[in-house]
Image 1 (tube, one colour):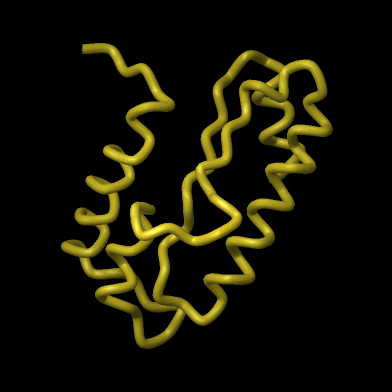
Image 2 (image 1 turned 135 degrees about the vertical axis):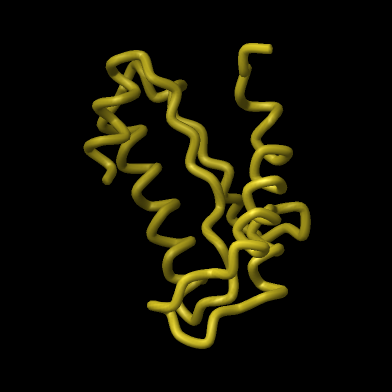
Length: 105
C-alpha cells in the first residue's frame, strides 16, 4: 500500500488517507498500521511527499467520520456494514475531507 501511495504522489496525484471505520476489534491496530504506511509512503515519495495527506490523527477525535459506524458495529468483521451506516459514514467523510480536496462545482 505504501509503495502505491508513494508512486501516485510522485506522479502528481493527491493521496488522502481517511480514518478507517470504527466498531471492529482491529480498529486500533488498523489505525496504527495506516499511520505507519503513510509515514513510509511519505519517505518513499521524498520531494512529492506534500501530495500525501493523512487524516488519521495520533489521538482519536470525536470529529472523525469513523465515529458513525461505531454507533452500528458489525457482529463479525467479515459481515458487511448496513447501507444506512455506510451512507452516514460517507456523508461524514465528505464533510471531513472537504478542506483538503478541491472538487469541481
